[in-house]
Length: 82
Image 1 (spheres, rainbow, N blue to C red):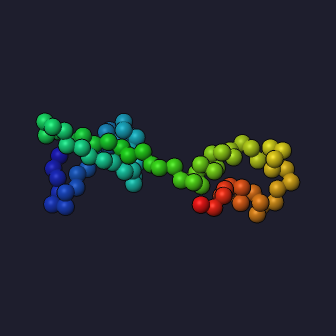
Image 2: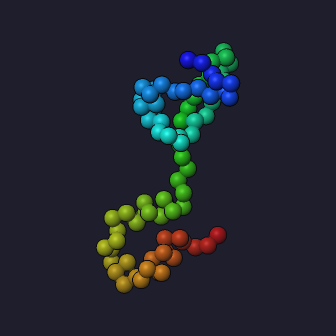
Image 3: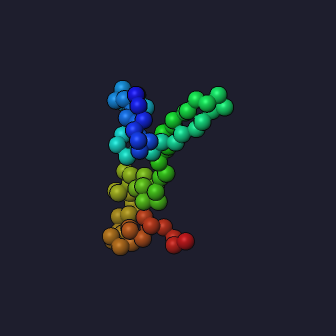
């Protein structure tokens, strides 16, 4: 495997699949004391919106939401303003 003039290298498909690297995945590199290079997948940060949806998943029929209109629900999802 060779590094291109732009510093790019192709990660073999078997390695991408085993490491669960998808297109646009982020990776980080670390140079170890012996000179070896370690590549790690960067875990994506969870956005406020994703956390809000995870909090509400499966709860649309909960009694707390029964009489809530869309605007009130969106405000609840967004939470208090910082």
